[in-house]
Length: 80
Image (tube, rainbow, N blue to C red; front, side, top):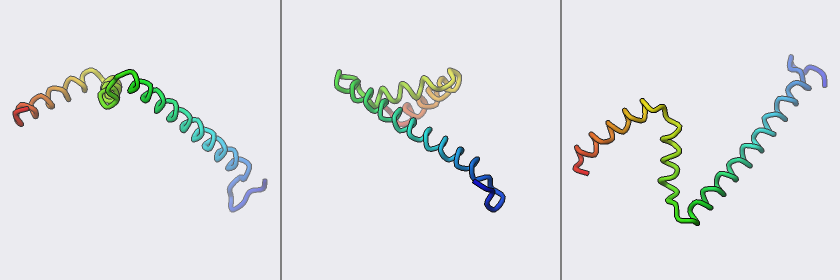
C-alpha cells in the first residue's frame, strides 16, 4: 500500500491489526478471570472480598500499610 497523506499504509495496517489482536486477547483474559470469580463464588468465597484482596496484593507494602492506618483512623472517627 502506498503512502497516503504521508502515512505508510502497510505500517498503519500492521499496527491496527496488532492492536486488534491484543484487544481480542484482553477480552479472552477478561472472560477467563470472570469465570474464575464465578468458580470462587460457587465454592463459597466472597467475590467482593476476593477482589479487594487482589487489589491489596498489587499494592506496595508501605502504601498498603499507610492506607490501612488512614482507614483505621477514619473508621474510629465514624465509630465503626
